[in-house]
Amino acid sequence: MRPEQDFATVGERVAALNDRFRHHAAGAVLREALNAKETGRVALVSSFGAESVVLLHLAAVVNPDIPVLFIDTEMLFPETLDYQHDVAKSLGLTNVQIIRASRTQLAAQDPDGTLHQRDTDACCALRKTIPLEAALTPYDAWITGRKRFQSGTRAALEFFEAEGDQRIKINPLAHWGPSDVQDYLWNNKLPRHPLVAQGYPSLGCAPCTSKVKEGEDPRAGRWRGEEKEECGIHFIDGKMVRGPIKETVE
Image (cartoon, rainbow, N blue to C red):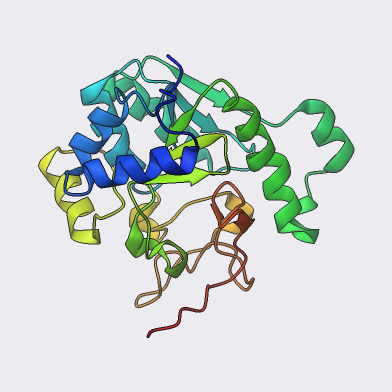
């Protein structure tokens, strides 16, 4: 089903959705987003990382046949690949699609697998952003597990966002705090990613993810030592975020 054209632009549809669901809980936002006329065809994108099982469980309860796009950068921890398989099976998710970079593009741009050592932005674009954009082509909206507390660049995150003028991004867990995540994991007896207990509260590709020390920000281990907070899959005002956004308090 294509999105309803009652609203002239994606931005106007997003504004209407945020107004309608402003006081809804995460489960209700997810359920309604899958059926709202404004969202059209929807997929869920998951890294099967540290907290991904929460959103995947919510989605499986609503619709276990929802398309789930998993980007295998071919540089992930082996534990993540095993976890992806086990979680999808245990939750009964029937439509998990494995997304990988083009063989031709990999051969041309990263033939020896060392691009991440020279240019992390280019590596993320090659192995994550470009493959995901191609995979999202059939969809009008996609669901993420992003939350406001995860970083300064996400502090004002809403349930619905306009991604350019083509697609809507849905963030059902936007208003959840760390305790909400932990409570949901505990109450539903969900399996944790095995690396969380080893000091990895936020997980990406193995070469660019390090352990986080006590007292550090949970995402401190992502691209450690670089002014980079996002891989390029998520944009702020149409631009990839490399460093923290300076906020002005008035």
